[in-house]
Every structure is written in structure tokens, then in C-alpha cells.
Image (tube, rainbow, N blue to C red; front, side, top):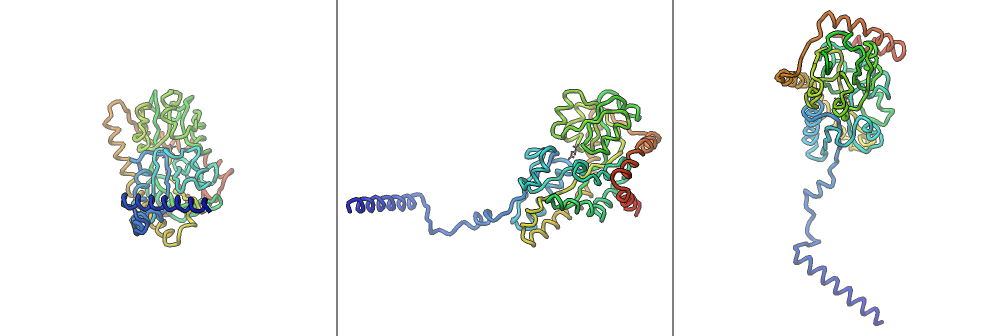
Length: 349
Ligand code: LMR
């Protein structure tokens, strides 16, 4: 009995203490929940990881997409962008997406070719001649067909974005002919087609991940690389490799992908907004990517120790002939029909 009375007294003292503290500190459990705070709890966050700088076609289009989606959903969805490989890099972003550790990534289509060999078709050198052709293929039925192949990996393929045409950057002597590649170590993304290009020119391709490229260049073991001007400028590669040759020999583009379970978990009205925002951001990307690369080329032209050359037309024609075995290989080892289809799409105009 005495124990019962003691417990009751202690409980009463504690309760009086709590009420006193709430009154003193202004806390009142009967106060309505802060509306804004409640809204934030319901907010859906899309973490979007990519590996390039913000001031690039991919970086800027990701920002555009985030703005559009937040506007369209009145803040019900917030897109948090992690550029520069802050969250994931080339080596782990795809696994993270498949596991659902990140909701969105945007790797180059070349980096998807191990998983989907048919996608190598997009890497074929001198397949595309203009930005319009790139847009026609990547935003048309052919691009859609490629994106649909992602379904079997628990990935929702949302769109392709463009960066632009790739050029050659080198240390030592400028690259003006196919023979200038002989014996060089050349960084290229891990796509069989890209690697084969340089093997045909008697160079050794080397597939380092993008976030390690600057450090690799500092070791002075890599003699050349292929990349777009916006990547070369924004990452400062030109500080270590000072010869730029305008070759426009291939295209760098991106597959914009979302974890499929995450996409399916969104209410259907929000799924529609995601698709709308992606479509508008994609249109913006194709309108602005060339301008961004042109602007960075102008900046490089202002830097006195960067030498800029353009591959001659004769040499370009030689390269096209020399690259023919890559097309033959694709036809034989991957898909004849895919190549025919993309060529038909390009020649539609
Ligand atoms: C590269 O590795 O050079 C590119 O894929 C980087 C990028 O995403 O633009």
C-alpha cells in the first residue's frame, strides 16, 4: 500500500513538472501541427546523382528538370541533385540505381553498352553528322525502343539528353592524322566500339572512370582522350592536355533513368508530372546543348597555351574509311537490323 502511494506521488510530481515545463517553454501539445511542417513530411524526394560539373548540358538540364517538376507538383516532389560524382561515380551509380539507393542517374549511353550491347550503335564513329540527326534519333521511336530495353533491369528509361560531339584532346603533339595516334595511350569510355576506334589507329585505349580522369592525367601516363568541349572545359582537362583537335567523330549523350519501383510507387498524377517535366527538360536540352559547347570553345580560344586545330576534310574521309571494320563488327556481332533502323531514321529528313 505504502509503495502504491509513493508511486502515485512520484507520478504526480513528474506530471506537474512536465506541464510546468511546457507552459514555461511555450510548448503546448494541443497546438495545431505547423501546416508547412506537415507538408514537408509528405514531400517526395528524388535524389538525382550525376558525375559532371553543373555548368554543362547535363548539369544544367538536371537543374531545369528539378525546377520544372517542383513547379508542376507545387513542391510535392523535390529533386535533390548531386553533381560531380558527389554521391556515386561511374563504377557504382548503376548498381545504386538498381538497388533503389538513388532514384535517378544519367550515365552516358556508352557506359550502358556492357549491359545492353545493342546500344553500341550510338557510339559508331561518324554515324551522326548534325545535332538535328542526334535529336531525331534520340527523341524519336528509335530512342524509345532503346529506353524500353531498360525495363528488364528494374529501370525506367525516361529520356535521352545530348551533350554534343566529341573531340580529341592530347598532350605532346597535336593529333592531325590517324598515324598520330600510334603508340599512344588514349582514355575512352568503356564501350567496345569506342575502344576499337583507337585500336584501329594502333593506340591503346584505357577506360578510367570520369571522376578519376583528372588525377590520371596528372600522372602523365595518358596521351590523349575523346570528350566534348563542355567536359574538357568544365573539368579543366585542357590544363593538362593542351592540344584540341575538332573532329566531331562521335556523340556523347545520356540515358536519363529512374529506379522503376520508385517510379511505380508514385501516384499516377505525379508520374504524369515526371514525364511532362522530363519532356520539357529534354526539349530545353536539345535547344541549348550546342550553345553551351560553343560558349566553352570560345573560352578555350581565349587561353593562349591551348592549341586548337580542325581535322581536315581529307583526313576525316580517311578516318571514316578506316573505321569501317567497326561497322562490320557491329553488324556481325551485335545486330544488322539495329544498324539499318538507325540509318533509316537518320536519313529520314
Ligand atoms: C565521360 O566519362 O567522359 C563522360 O561520360 C562524362 C559525362 O557523363 O559526360
